[in-house]
Image (cartoon, rainbow, N blue to C red; front, side):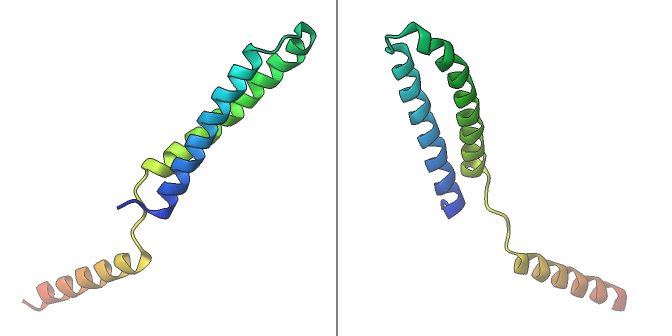
Length: 89
C-alpha cells in the first residue's frame, strides 16, 4: 500500500523531472546568444535545485512509512511481560 508521503514524493519527483526537461528544451531553442550567457548559469543552478527536489521526492516515495509509536509501545509491553514471566519460572 502506498502512503500519502510516498504519493507526494512521486508527485514532487515527477514535477521536477518534467520542469527540468522543459527548461532544458526551451534553453536549447532560445535564439539570442547574449541571453545564453545569463541563461547557462541560471540553468545550472535551476537544474541543481530541481535535482535536489527530485532526490527528496524519490527518497520520500521509496522510503517505507515509519511504524506508529503505539506499535513500539505495544512491542515493549509484550517484551516486558515475557521477561517477567521468564523470571517467575
